[in-house]
Image 1 (tube, rainbow, N blue to C red):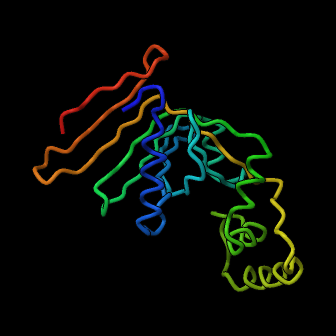
Image 2: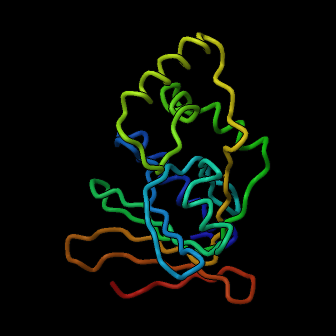
Image 3: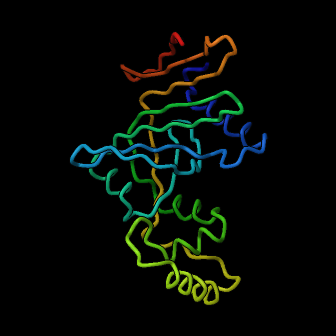
Length: 193
């Protein structure tokens, strides 16, 4: 484990999960806490691993975005049971630059791009028929042109303060390696399973 590149193993494991054909290989549980201290967790897609941060995207009016504005402390967990691996991260989230949000929106699959133009995720709706009609109209209006990134779409970087890598073992002595940086420099410790 290279303490100067604490996220390098995560990037490699994500690549290996994708190469193994795992569905939703980049699915990560994101836990936030609102201003009243109530926790909330949901699955998001990890869009990028950088040298010192991981990146995900979301509409900026969602509950998760509101939670992040109120309290940027987050926890994340990735789990690949068939590979016997998991990763936990804890850190602080910060809104990223608009150019990154637009770049990552452009990489979303087209159905999700179009859906983001018509759906206010998480808000109450009577039924989906009206939304499906709006989606069909939007699909026709946009045609084959690129789908524009909504102005209220954003990217968030999570800068971890702690990371734990876990590898399954048949003898139940699972490998656990924890990294944290109490004084600004990453330290690596092996943990008992």
